[in-house]
Length: 293
Ligand code: ZN
Image (tube, rainbow, N blue to C red; front, side):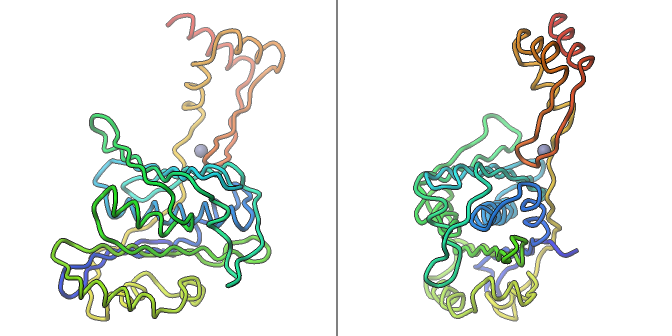
């Protein structure tokens, strides 16, 4: 298992930490959407943050959708994760690469721009709940931190990193989400925050092959307790049947055009780029069912 999330707690039981390594997940998204460096970093960091948030907040059979709606060149980014840590993602403009920042890192903030970070939690009951905060830096980790503070009232520290190789493949991807539990003292918090600042850059650690367990120990100390280890994976829940249901919502005129003029239809899933083809006969079947309903 190379991609997984770990949950840990510090010795005093006042700090909860989630760490993740997900190079394969981000690589899968990179390949499927053919993302360039800035788009890879935005989509990858949003996927990592969403997985960590799911690990922190979700209970059984629920899901969470994060929408990063900035005015920067990458456009909208939408990521959905489930309580069993499956993730799928969409980015409006996959082909964005920007000059690096002075420190050599990808200019993620510029790629995202200003706007809103929305988090919708669908717990399978009543209406889904959506919380929204303004994008503070567009670097995404800070934006998740701000969301946790404002919308969930959880003081936290978040780090997210995606390293993109010069040939656009993903070199490393990982991160952490630290949460202060109600009993955490300011002293304990500043101690661990200082520790985080003193660590090498997250992408350096991930490129060195640091595991989620090791990252947890670096942040919380060797005496922390690892509570849980769960696999994470890129997985889209789309299917030919699901898209047939969407076709069935079209006006009969549109379906007839597809049959008579295009002699079929092909739909591409925005989250995974899988393509579904519908023959003339299959479209006629959808049209026939529409009339029966
Ligand atoms: Zn799909």
